[in-house]
Amino acid sequence: MPLILISGYPSSGKTYRSNQLVDFFNAKIKAATESRISRLTVVHVNDQTLGLSRDVYREARSEKDARAAEYSAVKRALGRDTIVIADGLNYIKGFRYQLYCEAKALQTPSCVVHVGTPHEKCKEINARSLENESQEGGYPSDIFDNLIFRFEEPNGMTRWDSPLFTVLFDDAAPPHDEIWDALIGVGGETKKVKPHQATMMKPAAESDYLYELDKITQSILNAITGWQKDHVGELGGQITIGDQVIELPAGPVSLPQLQRVRRQFISLNRQHSLPKSRISDSFVDYLNSNFE
Image (cartoon, rainbow, N blue to C red):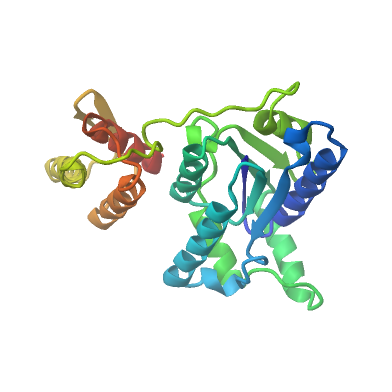
């Protein structure tokens, strides 16, 4: 059943909005007469349910472990009769893509609910939370500023961030009915999702699949670094790879950044194997999504 990814700045009210969704879904399930609805359960995954403190976002390693904990919890909870609300920071688009792929592999729909509280309002709320000792507390100021700086806002034009529902600070509630219809279905019709090549598990990969995955992705990185050497000082630009075009960002892209994106892509597709003919196009798409 569906996966709902909550996104937003730290202290934007993500857990408050998530609890509104939990209450709405539970009420709909309780009132349902259809068996496919009445058997559903709602699972809410966030830092509190995982026992994570705000300090895990101070260091890269502990933050990576925190994301792994959320990923594992969501993966365990996803199932035929479960609505999963992933109420983490979810501010890295590559991480949202990973969770999207997990839902897609199970042929269940997903969406992103973005809590669009402005930066300054989040800062104000966070400061009050830090001062109020009766509350769990906000984020330490240095962590808060760093997370704001690194935040990658969802883009409804990408398949892993769509459908995208934005909840403004002054909104009384999220668009409950629209989210329900998009994920559960309308008029008794179950929402059906077809797995695509990037998420379909195959009985056995082609014998040299991993070799080709490694070779093709490395050759594309070589093309990017070669272009950069020939265009020193230029920002942006286009590199043609087969029928695809890599749109380089306006800012500089270092080799460690490129290697990190490549490792993420290989990790995502090591098990969900692509046809060899699709590796190049899929990696170019993945690069472009990370360059946006």
